[in-house]
Length: 107
Image (cartoon, rainbow, N blue to C red; front, side, top):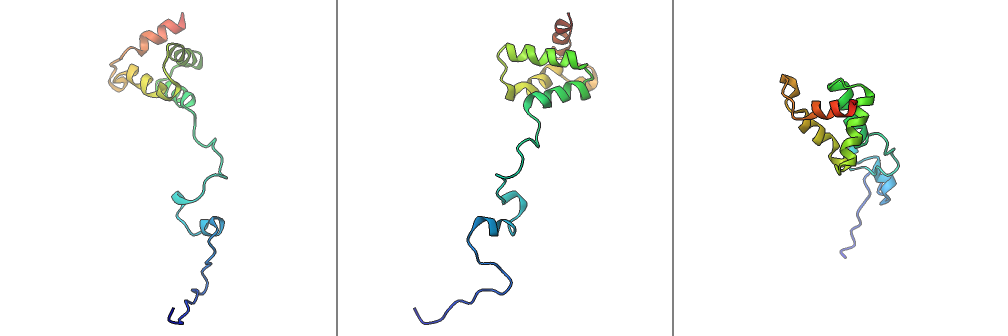
């Protein structure tokens, strides 16, 4: 060494602990282990919300649709994409099979 020492920058913590540095990092890089994991809906809740709020199916029918898909081997992670696929182009009145599934659940 040449004998020179590095002086710490005034006002900045030089601690190497993740807790101390956590405050200075952008939110997307912070340790999220202490935050609640219930902030995002699960796939079933997302699908239920789409069926009830977007397509206006009553809760009993939307629950029946979800149950029918799950019991026929659709994994929970694929529920919403499957329902959207079955809904077709619902915005313009083109169904992809969801109306028939809803009718079968209703019986």
